[in-house]
Length: 140
Image 1: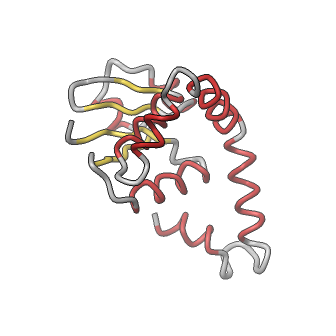
Image 2: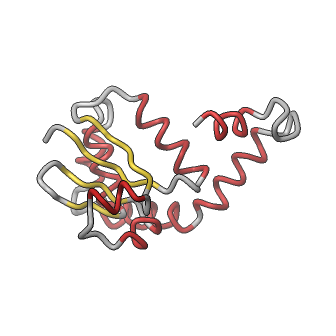
């Protein structure tokens, strides 16, 4: 496997931040990011339920393998040099149920978690006037 394509919700602040974090990590497998539900995603992966890809992280392997939800998050960690061992541990039969519950909770609360980060990060100045998150959103 050379590349994993990650379909992420670009409308979600938390999702954009996680994308930035993933891109900054040394990786064994390249991660390519495509906005979920976009024309590019629909063109490249017509077989997917694109409404579902907006609801939970979906990752597609070179061979067409599809990982969603907890499996999607774990395959992203597996691709990273410093987190592969964590991914394998969390995917074990003993820990996978806990990992699934945690990831489901994060996914269900991602809008609120993203807002909390924005409010905390922008506490020192009004949005658009020195707010780092607002600048991040405008710059890409």
